[in-house]
Image (cartoon, rainbow, N blue to C red; front, top):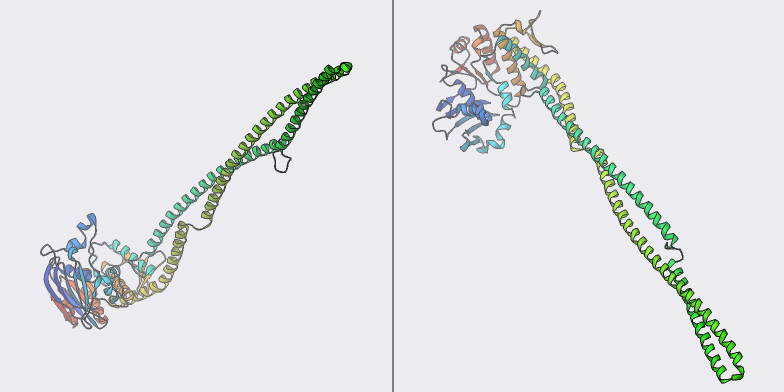
Length: 515
């Protein structure tokens, strides 16, 4: 990518300003507070957008810092740049009420909305974090010597481990572990709830099974009672037996009643004959006596069987009452039994559902498996990237450092404890023993090497915002020579003239831009 021109319409302290850039080295010169950092922030915002934070953080975010006071409706500008042999015009308005971003391919005249991702593809999908940590370099003004040592170690270790200083795989793995712990706690709680519910169901199942056994025992007793009353299917009917006995008794009673009537009639006939036939009175009286005896006998038997019939009828009534009571008890117990059986089946089905729930993986367990897989993958990727990217990063950093130090420091090393040293050819020197200027050279070499590795699809302009404050003339000359040799677009912001003086002295062409 080569930035050709900027038209800053309204951004921070700059209004309606056009800046032209050349493909090689550009020196953006101005006094302090002249707007050099504003230009660099504008370039970054045009490439990656300018989001606004929420709450109290919005008071001091980049959006609020550079939001113009005058004509706030227009907050942005235009950038013309070249990428992959195509010329583009990028227009943005960052004002939240009039947010707009459009990208015009000046060659094909194709106009697209930036929000639809057209710009990301042109930029090679380089993230804002990669941009901030590679080609956009600012001076470490507030960093002490020891802080700079730690900064260099962290920076190098981050790239060795991930290939992108914006990505912390160690932190990512830790976050995954914390997330997994949350799911494990939820799954343990869920399993305990399942166990408690199963235990509760088992108690209810045992209780209902006990009630069912009691009902069965009661039904069995009813069976015995019905058997004694000949009420069970297959037995001779108890009602029929009672009816037979009643019928026999009634027949006997009626028979004796009839005999008594016949005897009485015979006695009456005998008396009549005795009256009519005086000579046979003795015989007639004998017949009458016999008839009277027969009447008495039959009367007594009829009375006997009448009482027995009443007894049989009472027995039948009691039998029918007991029969009805047993039937009612059986029906009531059977209904209760059926209800208990249904409740038992429901409880057993619910228990099996909990068993199935324990057997099949839950959503928590699926998430845990996914997190385990992610952690395994991250661990594998970390080792792979460490081998692939870390080695290339150290090699290219060492090459750049050797060039800009004239071979004084030939190689950057790092041990397993992330302790960085540099190799001078005959010995290694720890960072803490190096001068501030040399450490800033290492920092510069790291970022340039990382930029080459991570911005492969699209080579970005190198933007150096007052970077060389701690460089002496020799170091600055070496870096400027290296930058010129790389044939990249370079934008150097400075409030000093020595960069331009050295460029003039070395015969290195550049474009001066005054603010």
